[in-house]
Length: 122
Image 1 (cartoon, rainbow, N blue to C red):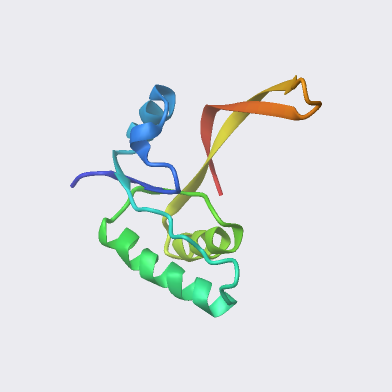
Image 2: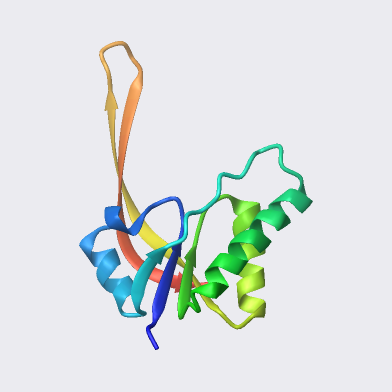
């Protein structure tokens, strides 16, 4: 039986750092299940329906673990559902390194780099 690491975020695994890919592969083969676009005007019921639709897709893959991060209400509801079913759920933690520059017109430009640190269980 193959072990599956579900990436349920807005960031496809193909764009992850080597460190994050290596950490995920400890749990199994990485499979992306795209995080949905959650309309800001969606009702609680509409968010729950999105969760149920994606929960079915995730469960069909029989995951060993699920990385779930994105819009807060959806994420909270999805994590609750997965944990009720005994599925291990994690978030990726990162270290933010920011460089700020004052431009000639007085405006500020900030460039942030995020470096993967670990997966932390919910």
